[in-house]
Length: 114
Picture (cartoon, rainbow, N blue to C red):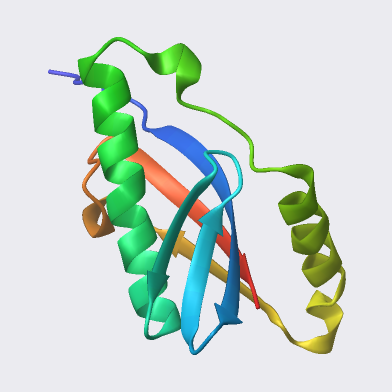
């Protein structure tokens, strides 16, 4: 018997990660969501929690048209400035498998520039 495995939705999310005032700030550019932490890892985990809440809320309230709200232009500008420096070794890339997040049918790819 052949079974068809459903495909996973892939969402590409760009994240600007920066140290500000003795803490780390993670800003998801496609959703304009922000979280902080004492370490880069904590800031990213906190941001994933915020993203989870935002996506769950959008699905539960049939409000998907308002899910994606881009960050302000100055944040995108900073993101692309940092992206251009990746050749200097400041580029990190993480691929989170579905087992690493609360959405079993999605994979999140986040790119962090610091």
